[in-house]
Amino acid sequence: SIEHYLLLGVNDLLSNAVHSATFALCQSRTSPPLYVFFYFFKTLLSVISVSSTTENVKLNTVSYSNYKVYSLIPQNERQTTAIQDLFKNPKGLDFWTYGFVKGRPVLIMSSDEKYPVLETFIKEHGCTLETVIPNVQKLIDAQRDNLFLKTSNPNESALPILLIDCPYLTSIYEFLDLLISQHSPHATAITLGNSYQGRPIRGVQISYKSNNPGVFLEAGTHAREWIAPATALYILYELLTKNYDWYIFPSVNPDGYEYSHKVDRLWRKNRRPVEDSCVGVDPNRNFDIHWTDGTGDGPCEETYPGPNAFSEPETKNLAEFVKSKAKNIQVYLDFHSYSQLLMFPYGYTPDHAPNYDQLLRIGKKAAAALESVYGTQYEVGDIAEVIYTQLCEFVLQINICTRLDKIYEFLDSLIYHFPYATPITLGNSYEGRPIRGVKISYKSNNPGVFLESGTHAREWIAPATALFILNELLTSEDKSVRFIAENYDWYIFPSVNPDGYEYSHQVNRLWRKNRRPVTEWCFGVDMNRNFDINWSAGEYDPCRQTYPGPNAFSEPETKNLANFVMSIANNIQVYLSLHSYSQLLMFPYAYTHDHTPNHDEL
Image (cartoon, one colour):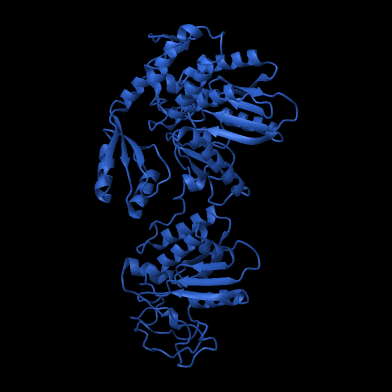
């Protein structure tokens, strides 16, 4: 039927709009021919009309005429890291893509005023830049010219609302009323209460029989992502199925959605006044699940998580509604744009959800189904691995010049984001610095591996290597790495000589020992020779770099290390000590030419 083909056309229109690389401005590449198609049949259907006026629409008061969108493709890990750092401190730039991977384009919007920031960045890091949208405002204006396609008689059919790429809130709610009236008693009104500015957050429940499992679907959390509510409406119209109860809320941030229509096309948050001239909370970050993780942004930033979890009525009411239906809901769907990403929990940690394999399998089937119909390719995975893979990715953020405080910050980050990583300590150094490490343990009764580095202060590559190994054990997907990571307990101390390490950074690049005063002019003990195993076999001159100390275990660094190792001796099967520089892989003994009992095995 004609209606059938119209629905197919709308389906294609919405699909293309989702996949358009124009920041969900809803400008489908197939829009002109489809509209011609619609005009051709308008006299038959009597449902489509075109309005050339702009009554009841407040023109956009925020102009993006001096804004451009640039594409930047990182060619190596160094550039990828630099982009990640810029993302953390964007200096007025607006990132349109997330998840920075070598070879994948990164889209950044910049005003002419802020362009020098971008220009300096590409010069410093050797990146190339391409302009993909020369004038953002022209794109917005072009969209507004297509927004005035309205229904001639909204009571005749539910179909016309679907022909509006990005309907206004009033049109959305009229559509909901129409569906409810046409499909009662199976379609009933539901609400999440009111928004901060008092707008109702309305939805529809579709239920054909009792005891159905439930599907909860919401869209429009971020106001400017107009294609999300349109997609929710299309799904609502199409999926009047009898085997599930559907709870569909097309716009859970109505204040922001209206504001993005009337004032600022790229507005993202809700509209709560926060402080001074700052308005809005990012509803997506306002839920009481690891609130503020990864977002320490201030109230003027687009990712501001609010003064506290559930500070916003939009999120609080949504959560309470979902909890009230928790026993029934089997699926929760949240629509955003733009990207071809199909993601599932978690986002706050790289750890996999308990049903990760099931979610991945479902996601891949969904992606394959989408590709078979539309040819689009969706990336599938949990939020952390798809978007935030750089959270704890090494990519040379820890390098051979990393200071001790940055090493410890990196350890804290790993401990925070990976429940299998826990802090361990060897106490303090001679000058009082903590000697910190990390234990990785995925299950009980694993054999242990002890790894330490930085015994000799100037061997900077050793701590960097230890950190790289630590990171790989937690993040690598290589099967062999995963095997040794999960079947051994790892005890890793990147810098067991923190005093000497800092001194080699601040004063003497080639400093080797720790920093204990020995004589009036001589400092330091060679920790590698201070252990109680054939002690005193080396130098006695306290000014020599190989000075073994006044007695075995005279240094807190070596004594505490030995005590720690002895406390877990029954568990440890391997002890690794990283040094530089040479390509040498050595094992005991050094004080005698006699071989160890297990020499051949070693």
